[in-house]
Image (tube, rainbow, N blue to C red):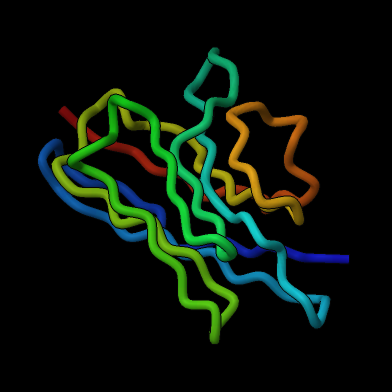
Length: 124
């Protein structure tokens, strides 16, 4: 069973930056696709960005393109989300998600493994 552990959330002013990390553990072969969803208060959880290992491919939500960068360190079983130029609308709980298959779907139910979430709050 794969466990995912997020870190790096916090409170930042609009225009600031944060870097989220997610470490996978519990199995010799790590999930091929790892990424991030977020959930704002009163809203559904939504896809933010994800990255597959083989082949290397990334996908991101349109509203974060040019501001967020997803990367992966396979040796450390870790995926990162560098978030720059943060907006108040980026506020929410950010969840790390992973799946064994290669494709990068945008729906929650396609991901097998989930972290507990880390809070990101952007003040205006």
